[in-house]
Amino acid sequence: MDGGIPMGLRPPAKVMRLSRLGSLHQCRLSFMRVLMRRMASEGWAFSRPAFEIGADGTGHAVYTAAGPERSYSLVAFAHDLPDAQRSDRVIAEAWDTTFALFDGVPTEGDIARLSRNVPLQEAGRVSARELTLSRANRSVRLWAHVVEALAAGRQPDIAQVDAVGYLMRTTAVYGSGKFGAADREDIADRAEMAAPFQAEMLTVYLIRAFVRDLVEHAARARGGAGAARMEEGIARRLGIGNSTGLGMAPFIVNHPTLFNNWIVARETAIARVRGLRAASEAEAALFRDLLARAAASVGAWRSEHPVQVARLAALRADLDALTAHVAAADLCGDFPWDRLLGWADGALGEEGQEMLASLVLEPHGALVDDLAPGMADRAEPPRLDGAMTVAGARALLAGAFGWAFDIDWSARAQCARAWYVSEEKLEPRLGERFEEPVAPYEQPLAPARDAAAAHAALADWPDEASVADFLLARPEHRRALRRAQESRAAPYGEIRDNTIAADLMPIDMLRAKLSFFGATRFDPRSDRWVRICMYQGAPYPQDLSPGTADLWVYPGAA
Image (tube, rainbow, N blue to C red; front, side, top):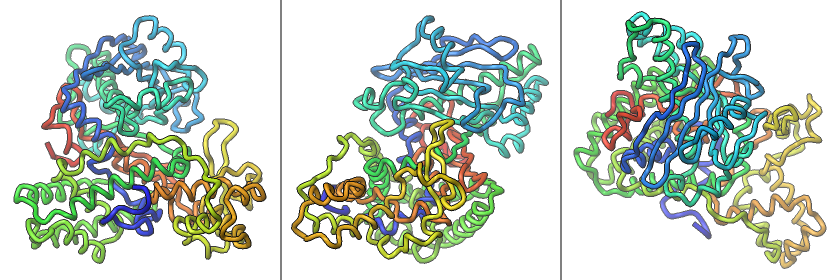
C-alpha cells in the first residue's frame, strides 16, 4: 500500500465521495458474513448453559459459542420495562433486555457481578473479562403479535413479520474498552477476532438466538402446553434491528487508516474479480440467481424518508436495467465482470453500481475472502514527521485534499455545521454553527477545511523549510499535517466531501460504516439517524454449517 494507490483500483476521487459511500451495500467482506463463515468452517459449538427466565419474562440466560481455542458467552438479562420507558434514544436509562459478551464461560460469581452492572449500562461498570456491552428494546406491536399467535398455537403472520423484520432492536453495542470492557488490543491477536468488529457481530448473533427463545418462552407462559414454536422458515425472516444515530458518524473520520483498510479490501476484491478472463457457467448462474434474489429484497425494502424513497426508486430502476442487460449478456468469456461493471458506469446510478460491485464478488469467494483479516488496523498510531520539507507537506495536502482548496470556507453554507460532544451522554452531535452556541466546543471533524487552512498557511514558507519549524510557529495545523502524512499509507482514508456543509447528509456516513457491518434494510428516520436490520435470513446456531453460512443474506438463498 505505501507510496500510492494499488494498480487496478478505482481512484479515491471516485470512491470516497459521500454520495457513493452512502450507496454501499453489504458484501462478502462485511463483518457479520466473515464471522459466520469462520464459525461454520471451524465447527463452532453452541450451547445454552442457563435460561433462568421466569413466567413474568424476567431473569437471565447464558449462550456460549465455543471455537477451536476459546469460548465466548453472551450473558443476557430480561427486564420488565413499562411501555412509557421504552426509547431508542441513547440517553435512555432502562431497556427490555441488556447484555454482555463474556470472554470464556462465566461462573455464578461472574453472573452475579454482571447482574449488578449490565442492566445499568453506562451507569454500571464491566471488567476486562467482558468484550461488549449492549441493550435492546422490543418492537412492541410485532412482539405482541408473535406472542399472541404462538400462545394460541398458530404461526405469526408472515406479512407482519416481513414488514418489521425484527422482534428487538439494539440501541448500542459497545466494545473496545468502553465502560471497563477489554481493549481491542487485548483480543486483536486472536484469529477469530482479527477482522474488525467480530466481538460485536458475535454479540448480535447470540442476541438473536436469545430473542427467539425469549418470545417462545413468553408464548408458553401465556398459552401453556398448546403454545406453538415458531417455524424455522418464519424465524429466519427475523433479524435484530438497530437504531444508530450521529454517535457513529465521526468514526470513519477519526480512523482514516482503519477506514482505508476497509475500502481497500473491497476495492481490491472488485479489482481481482474484474481481472478474471472468464467465469464458469456455474459462477454465471450463481450471479444471475443472486441478482434476482437481490432485486426481490430491494422490492420489499421500505422507507418513509424522502431521500431514501428516491434512492430506492432509483435502485429498483437500476436493477430492472441490470436484469434486462444481463439476460442477453455473455457472463462467461472476455473478462465478463469487467465488461459488466464498465457498462454499469454509464448505465446505472451509484446505488446500482455499488450493488453490482457487491454481487460480482459472490461467485468468487476463493479469490477474495482472504482479504478480511487485513481490514483491521494493527499499526501504531502514526508519528508526525517533522523532518519533512514544506514542499513535501504541500504535495501531500494537495494529493489528499486538493479538491477542497477552491472551496470558500468563509461562506456560511460551507461551514454551516459544527460537530461537538454532548455533555449529557458524551456522544458526538452536529450543531448549526450560526444558530446554536456550539462553535467553542467544535471537534476536529472537518479535515478538508483544516487541510485547506494548513495549505494556505504554508504558502509563504520556503520549500526547503521543515515541517517542525512550520509547526513551531503554527501549531494549530499539526493535526492536518499529520493526516496528510497518514494519507501516504492510507489513500482511501479521507472522505472527499465537506463534512460541515449545510447540505451534509450524515446518514451517508452511517450507511458507509453499516454496510461493512453487513446491515440491510437501511431506513433513515431523519438525516441523522437510521434503523437497520442485522442477520435477517441467517441460520440460527443449531443450523449453522458451511452450506448455510454465507448466502443467507439474499432471500431464498441456501
